[in-house]
Image 1 (cartoon, helix red, strand yellow):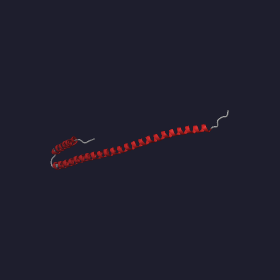
Image 2 (cartoon, rainbow, N blue to C red):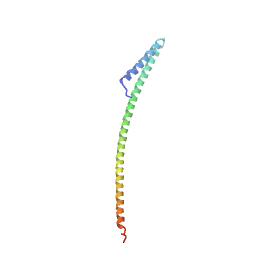
Image 3 (cartoon, helix red, strand yellow):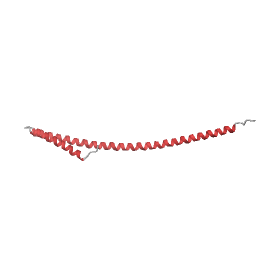
Image 4 (cartoon, helix red, strand yellow):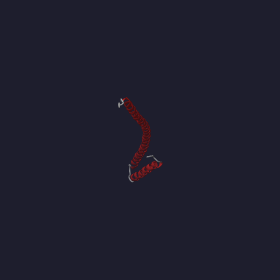
Length: 121
């Protein structure tokens, strides 16, 4: 599935919404909330970056797989075409062999006919 330009902004929007929700929750606490909020924000940034990286890697691998399938398809098509031509050649040889056998039978029949002694009458 091709990546479109909206997927990046969609992921960013989700990350921003999640960040806002986390920040609101942490703002309600006192004391070490600032440190926790900063750590949570950093973790969220890391998760978002890993998600983008994974998406890019999947796109690269998908393109590589499509390229390889295309190459294999071309090789297979060429092999099938070659085998089709070979099958036609074999059919032609078989047809010619049938004609030769028919001619040979005809010649043998004529030779047998001439070799028979004529009945005296």
